[in-house]
Length: 422
Ligand SMILES: [Zn+2]
Image 1: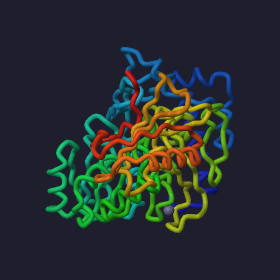
Image 2: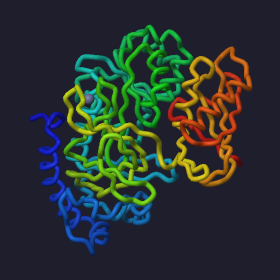
Image 3: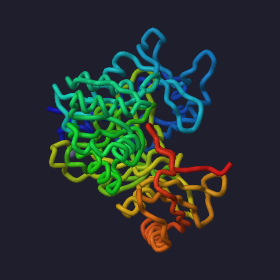
Image 4: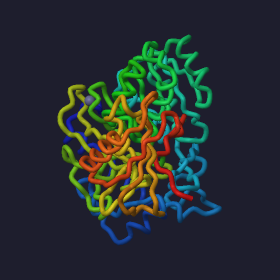
């Protein structure tokens, strides 16, 4: 049976067997996990929440000159076929080694995630990742696997990109939501181009309704998103044509859990649940991770999807690294952008949150620069309406400063929605 449509209970039984083997493998080969799990009994997948969480800092602390990957490395150097870097929003890069079977599974999962969007063999797809050392490079292998005609394009030359779209007539493009928005804003002709599908990945935001509606209008195309996490796998999740969140394309390779980000307590993966995504490798060999904290905050959908895929769906709300706490309330900049974007023709959709204090905790009001649409003039009533809506929807007190069209920086890769005072 196809792994994507297998009933969840059947998949759980398969994953439970994989997990028990993975755990035994970790205890045999991983110095990091042997130490971390010394005091606990091995369990099955149903009791995985009894095992400790793993976070990035812990792994990083075990890196040495002799072992730059960290003490969780399980494979012999001769077993590795590739080493990627993660760019790391928090600073220094870390290295992600893969064996041949790890890479194979990454590409298989990624191919399922991208195929969910409806792209099919023989179609042309333009990619805009300057993948280089980064894990996104493995996703490019997925396009080949799907039989797509892959047209690699980096960022940095938007004019040539738009020209290539006009001349080569691709059916799909894959890029960050920020770059998709930037291109559509600068090139109104894209709405009438050959592109039918815009696949966005690399940062949260592609699933926010108002932002997505703007992308779909700008490109005259259907927008779906994909999401991965460097240490676990590339494009693990991919959205289907129903556009109701991303299915787990890496099903069978990765187990997903939800936790309360503040307490670390496990949460049920129920419909509508929200929390931090925690992922566990099930069949990994080089440097498998157990209950890894992704720092991605997601909302879960578990109802039947008419595409037939039975895995749960997630929508990424934001990342811990971007989150601010304003008088006890968690605020994600991407959520601020979504509320502001609902002011449609009055604003451009670009925002910049400007925290006044160092660190995460902020005193209200939180300053937010909101860019006006072209030809619109600032008016107090609009600023007040945005401020009120932010308060109603996000329960946060802000100070809204309207700024002229074109004054906030555009990005060809990932957007910076927060600006720190120097
Ligand atoms: Zn679906």
